[in-house]
Amino acid sequence: MPASHDGEERQFRQIASWRHFAVVVTIMLALAIRGLMISTSPSTAVTINHSVLYTGLIAMESALIYLIWRGIRSSGTSLRELIGGRWQSARDVLRDILIGISLWIALIVVASAWHALRGGGELPGFVSDIFPESPVEIGLWILLSIAAGVAEEIVFRGYCQRQLEALTRNVWIALLLQGILFGISHGYQGIGAMLRITVLGLGFGFVAIVRRSLRPGIIAHAWTDIASGLFG
Image (cartoon, rainbow, N blue to C red):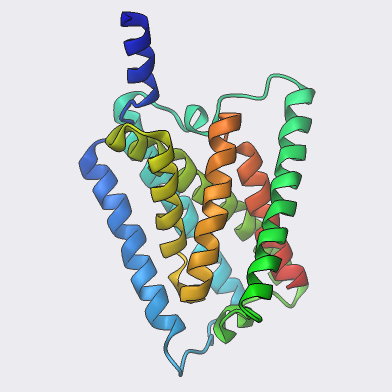
């Protein structure tokens, strides 16, 4: 019985202070509200240089990773542990790549079905306006997509999901709540996209639980963002 209790405590272990968690959630909600305001503004237009925009967003994603690292170090948790340890063999690498590809295909199916049911689903004009055009912009977009894939999986499926598990003492409630938070954080894409992205967040979270690693989600997330800019 004590051994079982110890296992439960490890599973639902708090990895940062609740104050830190509140700060992270507040930042996510503030960004979401600002994004939603921009998406619903009829006069929204992107006038900033794409390279400057991408560089700034890469810096923001890096800052999010730093914020999470500052919070989890107090509990002795490392970013490597949060991501899921190390790859032990080439087989592990291949397995996560294949899981990531499978997850990406599932995301395409969900997105296609969503668009079909809703009779379309175009992105707001200002979102498509930020897609890259020149070779330099394409290179920066790829770097930004990788940074976003790493940072957002660490924030939502790594940090938030683990903190919510500790708060609710239930893996599946935590999965649902992080998916909702993930969807809300994409308010700049509009309300319809927020609902669809919530479903995608649940898929990423489920894979993280089953695989006990963020790597497949990082691979699928980064490639989805890369593809949206290059082929969207």
